[in-house]
Length: 278
Image (cartoon, rainbow, N blue to C red; front, side, top):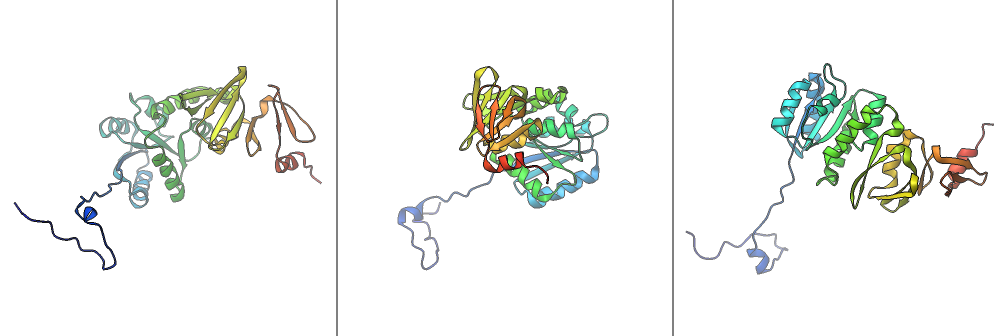
């Protein structure tokens, strides 16, 4: 066994370390590595996504493909991906049927689709991500970065997927449920019950029917995107209003709600709202 002091580290001439730091063990940071699976009945789509992942998502170190829903279900159970890229429209079983066929949802999902309006609306309000085909490199990176920011997961993927399944089975969009993370856990709010939302820095307060109130640990901007197609309007930088609860709008831009609340529109919104052609 070698004896004596270890050899002196070699540093640049202008670099000096204390004896304590010289003898300290060196630890190298190893970035997290992720497994990903794509399920798409089009082999070319799988191949293109595989190339994009290899080139632009180095954090994914193990990538598998499945060209049929049945093969994908088998791989989910054996491969245990951290992230699933799932095509919405497939023959025999679509993407949502695949999710229904899996017992445990311990992975996150990014849907891929050419276009399906109702499905996209349900995906968006369920706080899940999607990519439109053909897949844009920047959008792919943005979606994956959002996945990384959610690690470790503050909301169980199973909660979001289960809620998506509920929303897809509910034909009336106003009865879809919106997942909001709070200090007490995740609350699923029925959209038709939300009167308004109010920003408080990086938090959002939800005001609901029956005098209920919740504080969500997300920004108002995030919820604005999710609720945009449900008749919610950003009347002020701090206020998002469900137009179904608007009783009247005064000429000075005051929005009177059926709950008794009154919200002042911002000057910009007021000018746009009351502007008339010609």
